Image (cartoon, rainbow, N blue to C red; front, side, top):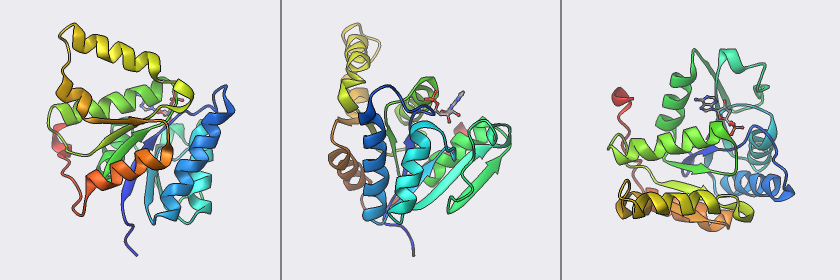
Length: 195
Ligand code: AMP
């Protein structure tokens, strides 16, 4: 059966210091499964990524993992994904993840998570896609980033239109429901030829 929606989740390949991070990864995976959705993610089994995928699979979600072959060992590719795609490189990974998803959501994470989140956002800003983007601010982890982004607006390097592209919140169910609502019945466009 076709999933009700497909969401690409970016998150840490480490668990982070606060136990709420793993808790929120479980809640996101579970929510996707319980709402008949599909998770698209990096295919690994370490840190929050593994927790997220495990919770999604346990809740009956389709899970699509996309991992470059050079990272299969390093990130402990999850062979129990519904679909595991082992691709040639990071660009293919990110392109396929973006194409297979209707929306993007970043959980707490490190530089890999930041890079993917900013890439999805900048791709939308330049018009390569129209998919909703969310940021899950668990335990205030992203507060300093958000204030820096507002500084970017203040200083004239960014604008409100860009900020309004983001759905930010601390409650996984609320953020996920908003993203799915924004997707609506028709999957959003993604122009892979531009990336
Ligand atoms: P991190 O948030 O640093 O723990 O990384 C989370 C995920 O981001 C990992 O699966 C990385 O493979 C991935 N990632 C995405 N883009 C990149 C990139 N350009 N360089 C390195 N890792 C990346």
